[in-house]
Amino acid sequence: MQHGVKKTDSFLLRLKEFIRKVDRKWWILGGTVAAILIVTVVLLAAFGGGGHRVGDLEWQFRRGSGTLTIRGTGSTGSIDWTMESPEWAKYASRIEHVVVEEGVTELGDSLFDVDCLDSGKVYAIRTVEMPASLERIGACAFYGCVYLEEVTFAEEGSLREIDASAFSGCVGLREIRLPDGLSVLGTAAFEGCTGLTLAEVPGSVVKLDETFSGCTAMTSVFLGEGIREIGYATFSCCEHLRSLAFPASLNTIGEYAFWLSGLESIHVPSSVVELGKGAFGRCLSLSSAEFSCALTQVPEQVFYGCAALTSAAMPAGAERIGAEAFRDCRSIGELILPDTVREIGDAAFAGCTGVQTITIPDGLQSAGAFAFSGTAVTDVVIPSGVASLGEGVFAECLKLASVHLLSESCSLGPDAFEDCVSLAEIHVPESASESMDSALSGYTLRRSISVDGASFSCAADGREG
Image (tube, rainbow, N blue to C red; front, side, top):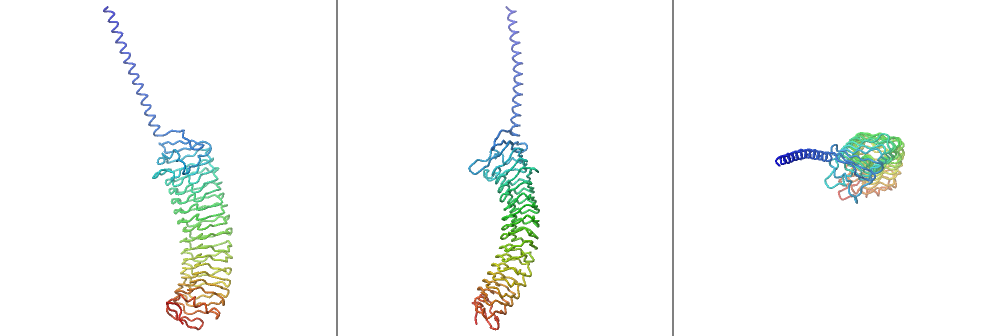
C-alpha cells in the first residue's frame, strides 16, 4: 500500500507541474494579445480609419498626417442650412490637407464652409489637391477657410465651374492659377482673400463679377485672351494692384470694377463698348488714362476722386459726361471738352481745384448743378448754344473774375456764382440780364459787380440795386 501511495503522490506532483507550465504559457499568450490590442487601438486613434460616406463618395481622415482623402466616383453632394455638417467636421481643427482623388467629379456647395461649423470652430486646412476628373466646385465650398494657403489644380483637367464665393474669405491664400477650360467663375469666388498676391485667369472664363473684390494684397493679375467682361466690383479695393493689361477681347468694364484700386495708369482697348458707373473711381494713384474705344457716354463717377489724374481723358465721340465723373480730380490743370459733348451732368467737375482754364465747346447744350463748382478757373466763356446752367454751376470758384455769356436764351440756375469772391464783371446779352437776379442770389460778399455797365452791390441777403 505504501508503494501505491507514493505513485499517487508522484502523479499529483507531475499534474501540478504541468498545470503550472500551461498556466504560465496562457499568461504569456494573454499578455501578448493584450499588448497587440493596445498597440492597435493607439494606431487607430493616431491614424484613423476608413469607411465613411459623403454623397456618392467615401472619405478617410488620418490624424497622424492631418490628411482628409475623398475618393470614389461622382459627387460629394451639397450641404445647406437644413442639413448637418459632414461627419468630418468633428475633425475640423485637425484637417490640414485635403486630397481629392481621381474619379471625383464634384465638390458640392458649402462642403468646407466655416459657417456650417459649430460656433467658434474653423477648418485648419492648408492645402487642397484637385484631380483631373473634377468638373465643379460648389458655392461656398471653402468659404472662410482662413488657413488655406495653396490650391493645386490638374493642368489638363475637366474643371468647368467654380461657383459663387467658393474661396471667399480664404485670407491665407497667396496665389491662384486657374486651369484652362474653366468657363464659369462665380460671383465673389475669391472675394476678401486679403493675402492673395497673384491671380491667373484663363481666357475660357467669359465674365468676372466681384471675383477679387477686397483682395488688398493683389499685385499681379493675368487675364487671358477671350475674357469679355470685367463686371461689378471685380477688382474693387485691390489697393496694391498697380497695373493691368486688358485683353483685346474685352467689351465691358462694369460698375465700380476698379473702385479704390491702386492702378497708376490705364489704357482701355478699342473693343470696349460699355463702361460702368464708378469703374475707376477713387483710384488715388491713377495719373494717366487713355481710351482707344469710342463711347457716347462718360459714366457717372468714372474717375471720381482720382486725385492724381492729370487730364480729363474722354473717349472719342463722347456726347454726355455723367454726374461726378471727374469730381475731386484735383490734379487736372486744363479742361478742354470735346466738340461732341452736349451735356454735362451734376458736379461732373466739382472740386477740380487745379483747373485754371475751361474750354467749353460750341455744341454744349446744358451743364448740371455744381458742374464746375470749386475749380480755380479765372475767366469763363459760355457759348451761344448753351440752353441751361444748373444751380451753383460755378459756386465757390474763388478765383473767377469774369464771365462772358454769349447765349441769349440761357437759363441760369440759382446761386450760379455763390461764393465767387473774386467775381468783378459779367457780360450777358440784354435778353439774359433778367436771369442775373437768381444767378447772383448766392453771391454773399458785399462788393460791386459790373453786369454790362450796370453796377450791382451784392450783400449777404442777396442782390441789392
